[in-house]
Amino acid sequence: MTLLSESFAGINARFHLAGIYALATLVPELLIRLVGPADRPDLDWLGVALTAIVVSIGVLAGVCGLVFQAATGRTERFPFAYYAILLYLPLAWLILRIEFLVFAPPWLAAEAYQALVGVSADPTLNLIVFWAGPLLTLTMGVLLLYSVPLCILAREQKRRRAAIREGLGMLRSCPSESARLIGLVLLAVGIGAAYDFWRGFEKRDAEPDVAYVLVVSVMSYLELVGLFGASRVVLARARRPAPSDLGDGRDIRTSGPPA
Image (cartoon, rainbow, N blue to C red):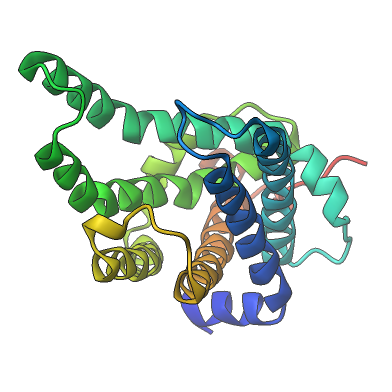
């Protein structure tokens, strides 16, 4: 089987994880919309929304852990709650760092522009940000592609890894596999962008509809397929013996989660 067909088969056998992943993405967003604008938040919903965000991070960590576990092919199984706790802080910190790397520069540029021209909100600038959104999302998706499984592997092995830098290195060192997986990321981002552009700039803050739920569900499914495939690539590299280990008869394996 090819990498993509194997990845699709792996997630299709665990299709319920895509639904859980999509739900963990949708619920906090819906609750945040109920809170209202930042300058006039509805305090009755604020606590609920913050709680939903905290819980959703744990759910996403648990799902990612189970997908990685499936990609390893290990017979020993660990439950959802185990991965939700084990990976909560590492994955949250990883995502926060990547979001900062991707979104902080354009945000600072926008703030500097508004300060220079002396306006608080410029329609042209907001329109530029709207059209540039898919490119920023694509950049984040590419950075997360290998860094997430590398982060999980490091946590299982109780090792410190520069997951983002190593992930960028794997993008260069595995061009064939990376091209296929980036295609999945591009497809997921393209579906989301097509929906946003179809809805239009004026309705970008409109309430989510059924079409939006379907779009998020498809994107979640594709993201998990990409995670499964990226985990396969990371694990294959981790099992590869170093030149100094060749010929000594040792069996190179990745370690499982600590007991």
